[in-house]
Image (cartoon, rainbow, N blue to C red):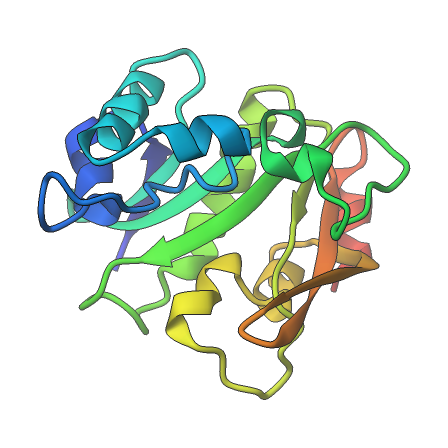
Length: 201
């Protein structure tokens, strides 16, 4: 299996991964953490998909899509932290260092899970951020150890996944997902990515 990760510029592919089965249904579309709460709450039904379509056509796509032989199979939400609700979070701390980008959602399409898609998907999200000038990248996964995580809450990712990608834990948080604590994982990329990666292994 050769997974290719590309910026989310094709709305129809994003729709396969994030869109509702019924066109008028209101689903997250990975906007809940991306937009100010008032803006997010004001978007209903097809408006949410239309908003994402505009983002896909913009200079800053809303994330990346993983493809297996041309088929969209995975999604990662990634953007500058300043552009997300994490900029105002009181549960996930801010740490010293360059202003980061955030990776807050990792999703593999049902029917394709358990095939090793998450690692290249996360790597692709990191590459997307670096190509756009990120000096640091953060994730906020659960620190679950051997505990199983409810699939509906697993979108935040796992500490072990981020560690394998070179991230290191820099702080605990006051946030939980599925009853499991989340940690702040960070990858410094400005001038010394290899050092940061070695510290996370």
